[in-house]
View (cartoon, rainbow, N blue to C red):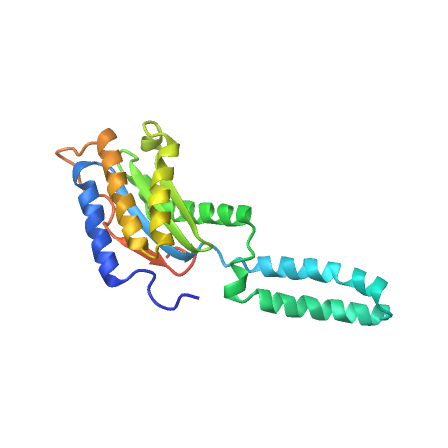
Length: 213
C-alpha cells in the first residue's frame, strides 16, 4: 500500500497554479481528485478463494485415495489460506476483473463529483479529473452544460495525457497537460465573463480510498 502522499507538496502547488491558469480564460471549473483506490474490493479475493475451493475436490477425488472427510478438510483449509493470501493488497488489486474495476471507478468518480459540488456551478460547466491509483483507472466527468457542446470522446484525449504521464512515472506532468488542454477546450465554448467568479477551489484533493468526507 502507498504510505506517503500520492503527490508531493511541490506537485500540489504546481497543479493548483495550473488549474488557476487554465480557468483564467473560461467560466468553466476544473476539479482534480487523486484517490489511492476506488473501492476496498474485499469480496474479490473471497470469490477467487471460493472458486479454488470448489474446483479443488475434483482432482483429489479422481487422482488420490483420500477420503471424503479428508478432501472436505483440505477444501476448507484451501479456502481460508487462499482468501488470506489473495487479500494481501499487492495481490488483491491484480485480481480485480476489468469490468468490476471500471464500474467501481466510475461510481467513485460520480460520488466525488456530487460530494464536492461540481454539479452546482452556475452554468453546469464543472469538469472532474479523477485518478484512481489501485487499480489504475482514470475518469473524466463533465457536467450537463458541457455535454451539449463537447463530444464525450474528446475527454479520451485528456485521459491519455494523464495515463501517459503516469506510465512514465510523471503523473503530475500528465495532470498538468490534461488541465491545460481542458482549460483550452472550456475556453472555446465557455469564455470567461466579466462577472465570472471562482466557484470551486483550485486544488488537487487526495483520498486514501473511496470515502468522501
